[in-house]
Amino acid sequence: MEKVVMIRRTFAVAHNIPSPYRVHLFSALYRELKSRNTNFEVHFFSRGHTERPASWRNVEIPFPHRFWPDYGLRRRGSIIHFNPGLFLYLSRKKPDYLLTGGPWDTPSGVMTSIISSRTTGIAWIEVNTQTPGQIDGIIGAYKRYILKKYDFIAVPGDEGKKYLDLIYKNYKPSRPDVVLLPNIIDENRFYIDSDEKNEYRISMRKMLGISSDDKLATWPARLLPVKGVVEFLSNIDTEIINGWKILIIGEGYLSGEINKIIKYKNFTNNILMKPYFIYEQMPALYAASDLFLLASMQDPNPLSVVEAMHSGLPLLLSCMVGNFPEALHEEGNGWGFDPRDSINTREAARKAFSVPISQLREMGRMSSIYAQKYWSTPRAVTSFLDSIGVRGD
Image 1 (cartoon, rainbow, N blue to C red):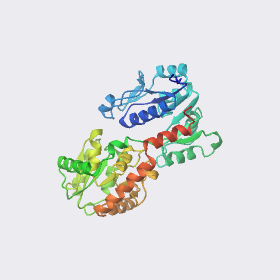
Image 2: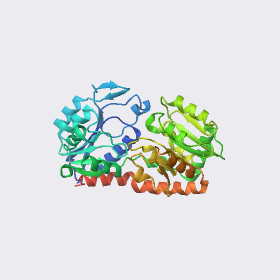
Image 3: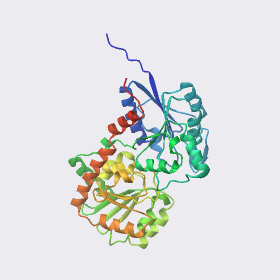
Image 4: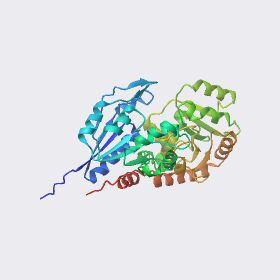
């Protein structure tokens, strides 16, 4: 007679919106939790934001989930989420585990933190010490008050741990346990064998009008001040990027200023600007590229870095991004720079754009090794669940 296994636990997630990246993570959690005799459900505050791709609203979701009515206020195209039905549901349901994304960012995050019942709570935050925001005084006390409602704090990497050291510098005995939950992607989408990669490289470059002789650096960045596009272009010249094409992918209100810089510095033949590529096109774009560039002045934990590494690309990476410590191994798989320092930026760019293609490919191979070491989906998910005590009994 077949043994009947009773599901005795529930793991719930309260999160803002679905995205391809989060859906992948939640799908992996769903599969692993099922093997550990635990139900899984995700509660979204909203279907999407106006500044995010419309396609995210229709992303396929293979796990139990619910979109809650959102009565929040709109501000600059975003909604300050407020989902009273969710708070009441969680209080009645009392899940065994509750993972709350952005616990202090919106009314929904705050109310979920304060009034929603659960046995074990995990606050999920994306923070880094390079752009910590306000962490002292009333704001610091407010953040510690919210985090005190939880048993664990999940952060993506070392920068998150260092941020908590700052905010708890005089309050360490009251800090919840810190666990790692790396920002993962579906790495299988981005691993492409050599024959297919060559086909993608030829077709994508043909579409972009880039010859096989040119080296290509791909730079996904919204054209906003935090992405550092103006600063980076102002610190390089045509001599540095001779023989290269730099593809900037994104939109934003700085497009006019950036185009003026391109013309003024005679970058017209070296720099291309395109709007967003759809998510399904990104593996082919990375396959067509020789270098990944990100010059952000502020970036909590960009998943594009992880995509590029799984795709086997070397990095020219700002030290201001949250996953910099895990991603960049200096001159092993790329070059780091401080975008606030013009000399440092120029020197790093000079090195990156001067190495031969053979060295770029070897450094890209190292990127894939580092990506598998830190951002492997099975490893990240099982380690996270083990660390908060979700067992398979």
